[in-house]
Amino acid sequence: MEFTAGGRLEVRITPADVGKRVSVRRLNDGSRTGGKFTDTVGVLTSWNGGVVLITRRDGERVRIVESSLVAGKVVPSAPARRRGPAASYPELARVSARAWQPVESEALGEWELRAAAGFTRRANSVLPVGDPGRPLDEALAYVRHWYEQRELPAYIQTATGADGTQELLCAELEERGWEREVSAELHVGALAPLGDPDLPEATVERVHLSRSFDEAWLRRYKRFGVPGPHVGKVLAGGPSVWFASVPGASFDAGPAAIGRCVVDGRWAGFMAVEVDPAHRRQGLATAVMAALSRQALSEGASAAWLQVEDDNEGARKLYGGLGFAAHHTYHHYRYPSAR
Picture 1 (cartoon, rainbow, N blue to C red):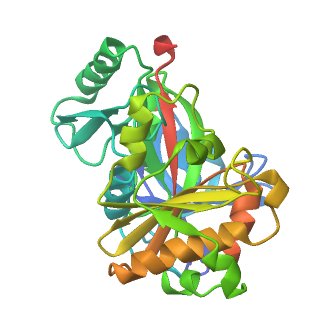
Picture 2 (cartoon, helix red, strand yellow):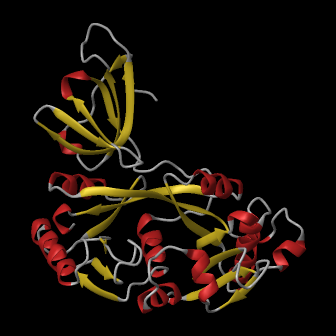
Picture 3 (tube, rainbow, N blue to C red):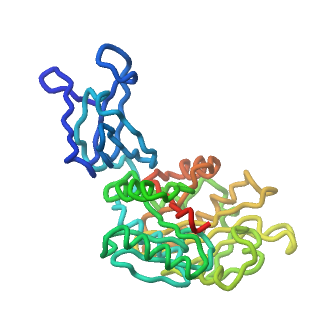
């Protein structure tokens, strides 16, 4: 990256640039007489008391002593995407939210408060895309009260790493004591290649598609305790929902693999792709996605998205091989008094 102007390093950012994406260089030992450089790129989220705070793409917050800066500049709000369908963060946030519809919701300005008796954080958290319509502290107090009334922890889902994401809100939440519990990435990719995998067609033909799921499908999913009615409402909710299953060796054994897809305009979202450990490395996850992709393509979709938690290396490898790339990172912040 180039920091020079007329052959000299320059710090060309000021506190007035808070909220912009910046690239900075600093000396590791904080001195001007020696030491090695470290470069940091992210959103400038605060500049107070001689300390610069930058939030990186993955949500990591980097604190830099102002006196150690040797160069800095404002850079484009998001790098050009090298592959995958173009999409804004607000578009993907709303599309992915419609795939995990809550049982109950309420608008707070442009924020959406969502609850589903605790089944999935996505359906039991605030989606703050836009302005809450009131001062932040007042909005956060309302959020805490709303979830307390439902005997649920107060969660807010935020995002970092793309144009229009919420690095500033993340910093505000952390300053007010909210704790980041879970981070994951939303990946995007082209849909058509998923429907034509490098697998025998007989493997894809083993996949059964349905508009509904059964108890065996739920047993393979295993993402809840006792499956109350709220679980079915969340899973069945969405613009056009499909469930996939691959029969196992016996009824008692349950499906060898399952999956869920929500078709929403040009987007097909994939989730709940699970494979019985006894049937892994047979291409069943790829087959499930292929069958669901073909259905989505028949409904006019052309782009795909899915969510991958940070520690799921197996899923990252699978989806990377299918052509998916990270679009942004999302986080769930919890208010600690709600424990």
